[in-house]
Length: 517
Ligand code: CLF
Ligand code: SF4
Image 1 (tube, rainbow, N blue to C red):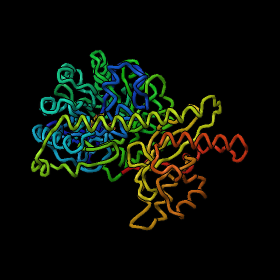
Image 2: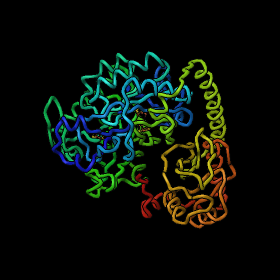
Image 3: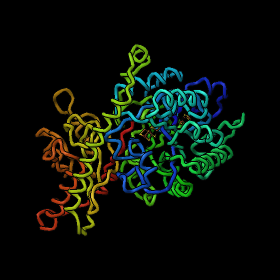
Image 4: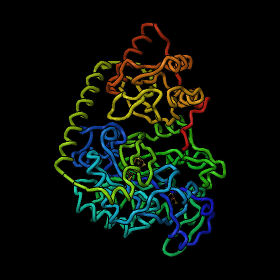
């Protein structure tokens, strides 16, 4: 998405201003191709054709399971944009796929290529390079494709990924194919121009500015045409949609159908992040974002044959690292240019082979635990929150967690359904009551919170709020532990030791809002 600065929030911006201003589109907008079940979920190798598995197995956005192990990076080579979104402030990075916040350092294609080699040498599990802004990559085609060209020559093992608003996509599909860009994200927020007019004040197309319904009509036609052209060529497409309560929330079910029928591989419905200090039209109008519960309900209602991405972190246009972590400060232009880069393909491959062994042992442990639920017919579902630093392990202290991953547990097993950002509870050695309240609010639809360690006071407060603090699975695999916990929970319910109480509505009542940053 892109965000809008106060000045640029006004509809009448000249193209020259537009091209010079630093439009900041962060993130991705890909749709994907082949229709078969895949990867926002924890679908694995047996669930899809081998050629699709090859494309998604180590892409952290296209595979929920891969995101625990593999990293992506973005290079901010695309400053300009050709549309205006009401959730975008051009002072900041594009909101299509990132949260408003910090202005990225703009790079030339040559600087970007050096940065990719520097990161690939330092972080061997970095497998994907995405161009996602800070404007629209296809409003800056020369820089975008020059970057891809340089990287495909120097680091051929890295997957190339692109995120766009889709306005000029049909014009670039052949070039995207030529450069072996296998993953494209299109941000599609509507297929009805009347709704589009509430989101996009204008689009700039064929040297002319179009406003209102007329502009939105052009945009939706071009987006859907581009999606069809990509999927015809076997390019995996993901669609990102920003959920804007009262504007397009109900309509996104229609969007889901429209993109699914055109071959999109994955749909990523993201929450609007909106606050007055972002200076966006929506932020200044008081447009709210959805609660975590509202977002999950919409994602659930769209989940059918097409997988829904639930693990998106709305990352910046210069993000580096595992999803949810940001190592971009280690790779500023000054630091990169001073680095002695040694890109060694064989050591990267050796490291990734070890990652695969780790990953397989995690999958095997989950499968084995799942067998304990065989024949289980209960329709009970519960959510659990998990403090983790990655690798699919419960390996974070409660007080150090900046976010909790949320899993839904049922007789079918465990499913990742989202994450909740929170302020650190532990501030320099002692807890902050306000932060603890915030944590409890954020996870109050969960029955339990799994942690590596937790102090006595927060433990008591969590219990009082009806949330079970669980540290018995410290440093063990998340999903294996969660299934074991759920099995024990069901056994206790059946024996009458405890009564199952649904906590599903609690977050709506008490407002477990997704934290806007
Ligand atoms: Fe980047 Fe996007 Fe490629 Fe991923 S991000 S261009 S597909 S490599 Fe990923 Fe970030 Fe969410 Fe985007 S977590 S904002 S979905
Ligand atoms: Fe901002 Fe353009 Fe991205 Fe929209 S498409 S969020 S206006 S940079």
